Image (cartoon, rainbow, N blue to C red; front, side):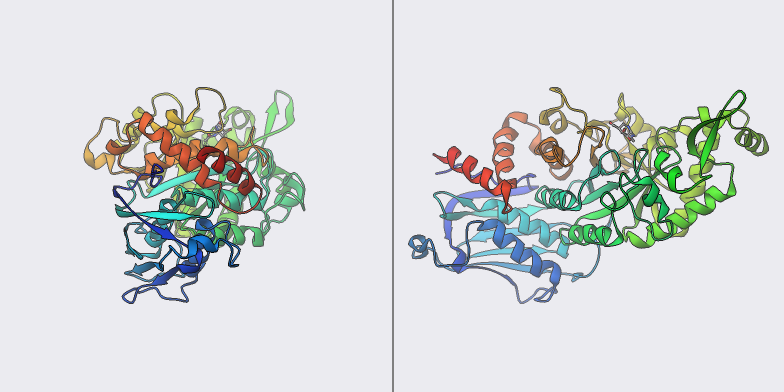
Length: 508
Ligand SMILES: CC(=O)N[C@H]1NC[C@H](CO)[C@H](O)[C@@H]1O
């Protein structure tokens, strides 16, 4: 019997049985069970039923082909029961993604608290179906009780160092759903380019994008990404990184960046946003107000990483501001003042701020609650311990930087990360809301994104969803990951052809 590889990420509880059932597209259907709060018309699940039918039966064109296996197959129904409806909502930090799946003769019963859990269960069911000979599909009797270890399981794409076409972002969202990632961290702008087309400040992309028409994200592009993500139970958290990493902002917003000085006067170069001008905070308030309405998620990422103080130190207005504020010569206080100001601005728009750990490292006395993304190499467990002691929530990214190529960065390196192995109380460990893989764009564009992202990111996906004790062996994971990698190449189109060849080669 073909080895049944099961589901990736590994469910919390799964039992496989040898009894199996023949599936045939003509006798297969999804339906809402009578006790489900969500019913036909719940566009999120109706769309998922169609999507997963195509994923399970990729070669089925609706005709009467492959009649031969027809006779053996009996009707098979996937019945979905959702306890609390919520088809038109957005996923959020508190969404319940748990589900139970029971596969037996003629029926798979999928029970979930919410539509988000139902989506996770539909993904798991689709991975249980396997093809033994061309167009003969089977599913084994299986029992699953599943829920995520961490509620925040993110993937960062950087669309500033290289522009990523919208269809590439959508494909990445598809693959994220196969892996049960649930947050797309859109690092949308940075030093090299500003591709976000702002309603309020169109010059930011007109002058700051690599190209003002072909290399931008219009409001409708952004809406398309947010909708595609929502249909897959994925949140979109935008990052407008500041005050550093803002060179492209200065192209479309004059006087925003700090003018750097050399001895005799302006050097012609610009540095971080100028924190000594009221106009900077007015601009950030206007921009964050727009961003807060365009992106529905309750989180917004404000950046705060790698601020170079040299330019601030050289500028006489900034020097005068330092004196006025009594910051002495400690520019960390200036960065903290700026970050606390924009965190208060985003709080006013009912957003929870995520910032890079630099903000925490620079100041321990920022009063507002915010989430710290730990990213620096070195002892990230030590850094997590410091943040947890301060009572702040943590997202772990440091060991999951996938953009850095090289032989040491293979999947096992991410698979063996143990996010809670820092010293600290159970209470402090509860502050770790999850982790994130980062695909920075210095060396990545549409030509090499997918092979650099997958299946290495899948290793982190299992670390963030599954029970650590049950998934501690690299050796045991390897054949499962190898099988899952092929399953991921499942949507029609170019990928499909390579998959078909690869798949049948492996089976012969
Ligand atoms: C938070 C953070 O990571 N900031 C920078 N650090 C190095 C990265 C590349 O690996 C990117 O350049 C990124 O912009």
